[in-house]
Amino acid sequence: MVTQKDEKLDEGRLNEIKDYFKWKTAIEMGLGGKVLKHGWANLTAEESGKIGGIVSKKIKKYYSKKH
Image (cartoon, helix red, strand yellow):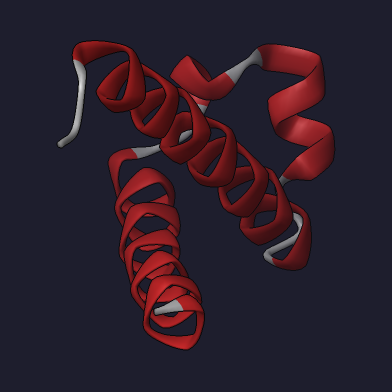
């Protein structure tokens, strides 16, 4: 049986994984410095969308290997 505590832990872990892949992808795209200097809000919609799409693929791949 999954408890609320378990769900919160899983949600917290997912957020950590998302953040990790988000930063990793931004750095791979050469945007790490821009994000550090100006924050995520200063990325263009195109940059944010590209990062989001890549992160989604990486998370799916991560979980498919894990389970």
